[in-house]
Length: 156
Image (tube, rainbow, N blue to C red; front, side, top):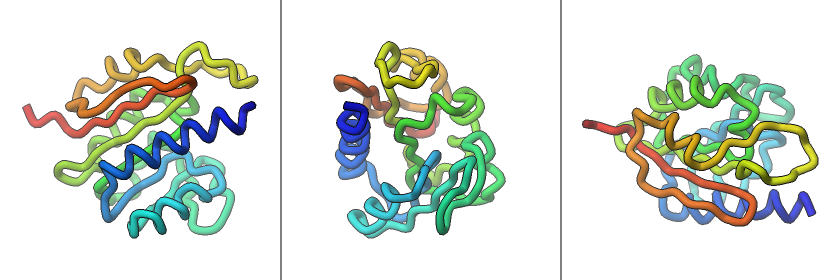
């Protein structure tokens, strides 16, 4: 059951990336790096990966809240089923600084109240949007087990 639930999140990200991919992307909380390899190939993009545990080849051992240390800018930064492992407020503040002009942040995560078997705090879509004050929200929604939000820097 959990595998099917996770599959929903990955497929949702892939669908969002069809519309919002870029040449240079960053996956935050990449785990084993499998999804990034698929995305790199599918969208012919350079995908850099960070994860606090850094298991695997070409994964930078780093927390999402520390992305400024990369000293790089990205067309797209995405996180799938990882936001709940971070200090979301700090991550959102740091991510916007690492986006290129018109760069996008894509978040796909478990919906608040979903039973995954792991005792974690999952945010609601509205909680995440409330933390994204510096972003213009360009897409958002919910599926059975996940929410998603796509934002870019609010130039106002």
